[in-house]
Length: 150
Length: 427
Image 1 (cartoon, rainbow over the protein chains, first blue to last red):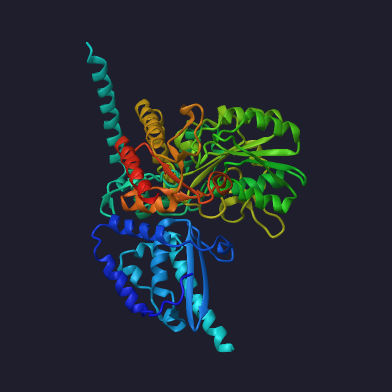
Image 2 (tube, rainbow over the protein chains, first blue to last red):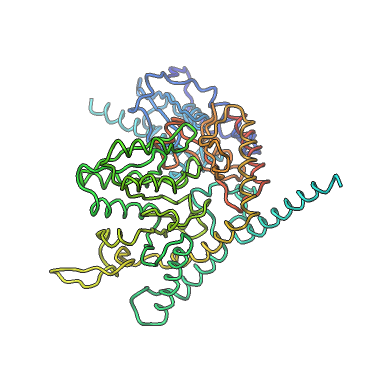
């Protein structure tokens, strides 16, 4: 899990950066080529973390998500056996790693749509992206509640 | 002189292409673009496109002949009933059954198998008996039996397939000889994953010689092979409409009359009764005994034009030749892709129908399917509702490509080229 980048930029800033990166692609094929590249570059999580508990259900490709908190911020690690899914995961990690609970809860994840990957978000596509987004928010909510009780 | 044979071959090829083009004209859904590319529809084993005559009848009945069947005395009801029964006659004729009483309409092959599992286990089996299914079954030919077994003390046995995907008749014989509690064998005619024609006539003979009843899941079988339930002598045969150019929501069950007579109804209500009182209810004669509630009469009627088309093309030698060249082009083309394995390749290629499930080393089937979709090519990925079988080949599922007679050789070649491209990118 990547951790403790000194300057964490806001969700909005990260989203804008990704959106502008994607504007260079005219062709869907180039976009997918880039996602595949990101997917291949993304560091795998530990095999010991690929447990059923961390597995996100309802996906045709398997997606594992792990999370831990530090100083009111969340850090995620994720992996998939499908490389395009892994590429999208890499984008999500870029945006959401190191963010505060409330910022994650408030985020609408609309940048996925803005970079033309909306079809990947449809609940019927069974590619796990939507389930992963829900799980990221669920972690933020759960940590927020847990710390409020302490 | 030297050129003559070649000219002849070209001429035959042109004639075949001409026929396929004519067939394509009958399917409006094929003439569209997806993601800005011409649609290449290769998911026919899941659902085939609907024939123009099917669409026309659907429209006519929905707009003008919409009335409940078998009940009222008015003209519209009589017309709807006639069309519904004409659908039944078309099914009877298509699978070579003796009488209309042996043809039950269901919502699809799945509900037909559920009906058989529940009613047959109740009427013919006792606790301790066993049902045998093949490893290569669709979930629809596994789960209904599991559910029926749970409530009746009956257990489920599995006949595994060879590495090639073929059923070993020797193993079947041994299993049945070893275990005389096996009373029912439920097996696919052609697996939706493997695309191999199983020797069902021989399977029926072996099972019957041990007194075992045989249920055949023909969802893929009716599409790619000729069926005569009389010649096969099977006890049950089921199929779905939507895989054979008809609408979804309709399927048919053939059952041997003597068995159907003794089976209890699966569902109650509607037109399936003779007399109803709170003391005692008697049931309608076959086939209505098994058709509770208002059926999908539009879709049932549409089976007639769909099956007439299916009959015409399966008897057409040129279409048969076309199907064979799709199979050989695919086998040859796919074998050039490194790390690709065709799951279900029989020793005898004539037993292979154009359904190909592929395992590609280093390529997740969902990734490949997603990219092919962007290229206008519709294929299936995952476990194809046959998880026990598919898990044997791959833990992340397979990529399935399935052809219909309206798919051209050129579509087949485009697919192979695009798959190469996608595979290179993903690896």
